[in-house]
Length: 370
Ligand code: GTP
Ligand code: MG
Image (tube, rainbow, N blue to C red):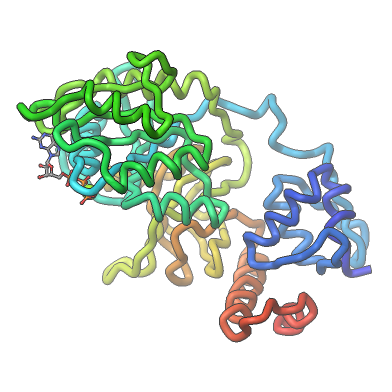
């Protein structure tokens, strides 16, 4: 009575069993559809899928799929999340800095910029774009492999004076595998040796056909240092974002993904989290990876304290029990006991994984809890 099979739980939530198996796997619990999971795990899954739990009795949990809080009517437009990729030295960081310089809101902070691995740029028309400072395609793929597929659009940076290089080609493969819309930014156009047409032609070899070459991929000539083409790049990102019709429900407990986390000397464990749905608020109790906590403060990408952060907003969180890993999922939960319980469970699963090379049986995983 304390347990439920994966298939049965999926059924009660009106979710696909495969999705549930995937979610459990991501959490470090490999199961098959007819395997039994305990009530705590079931409850965690129910909340991770955005459903509500009603406890009928101590030994039974009723899951109300019909009260799913992510109904269409709660969906609101959200900012696109853009990852910049490309070969070493082709100007990814320079381009990010230049784009950040177009932020109309950055002036308010006196031009002091803070590196938090992710930031939001506000356009003149008030629209926003979130940029992720992903160091490389490995990180991009690693995040995806860990279930943190946060990128909506990829900007592929190619230096116009250099051409397609190994990491450009690898990036293209990763972007295609992830099935993400791509915008090619041909950078360093201020350099005399730059030849954009040569880049467009070379891209054909890798099945990237830009508009000028009769394809549908957007491309734009830019110079990060001379700050040219930036408005066009922003416009193309916005256009692409419109086509994607990106939405999220801001009116629910927050869920997010850790972009990066560190132990700060003065402030303790700090994590930069990208909110994916819901709104994260100070005072919220959460579990993130194998850590838990209560939001003591939220700091935006301009170093300013904020009270809340909605979908697509990157924010620094203070008040963690420890340092989580990048790509760890964050979920707001109802109370501290629950947060600690889930965090302890995840920690034990991680511990189990470290101590055994063979896949641990579910039973042994649970016995570690008792
Ligand atoms: P990694 O992070 O090492 O992969 O490099 P990156 O892709 O972030 O390149 P970064 O922005 O560090 O730029 C590499 C070099 O190219 C720097 O010396 C930049 O000043 C220079 N650079 C970047 N963009 C431009 C540009 O548009 N024009 C010119 N002339 N130089 C540029
Ligand atoms: Mg860089």
